Amino acid sequence: MDIVVLALAGLLSGICASMGLGGGFVLLIYLTLFTQLSQLDAQLTNLVFFLPIAVLSVILHLKNQLIEKKVLLKAIVVGIIGVLIGGFLSGVIEEELLSKLFGGFILLIGLKELFHRKSGKNKQKEEG
Image 1: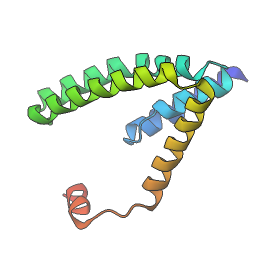
Image 2: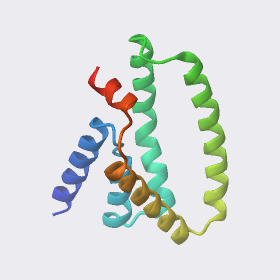
Image 3: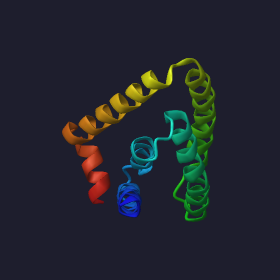
Image 4: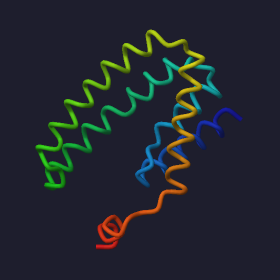
């Protein structure tokens, strides 16, 4: 049974990631519910899985000239600041509250994706 759940989690994570939805939340849910990993350990594991893929994606996108370097630099700086703030907060916030905040965040993002209408500019970019 464990191998079936593991395979389904991997498959669902891959499908979500390939659709641009981010498969990390599936991995986090799997790790916390089925392996009994703590929220912090699951987040660390997810980060370890994410980093090599992210580096490879950036390299390939830079090679294909799909990334604006000025935007990339700003994103890296803001991302590092976010990591530092998040790392600090994860040491201060209780794990149970952190799990609830994460669940609420995923719920809000899901609702936004379900009910947010795209503007005319966004539709044209996707179609063109």
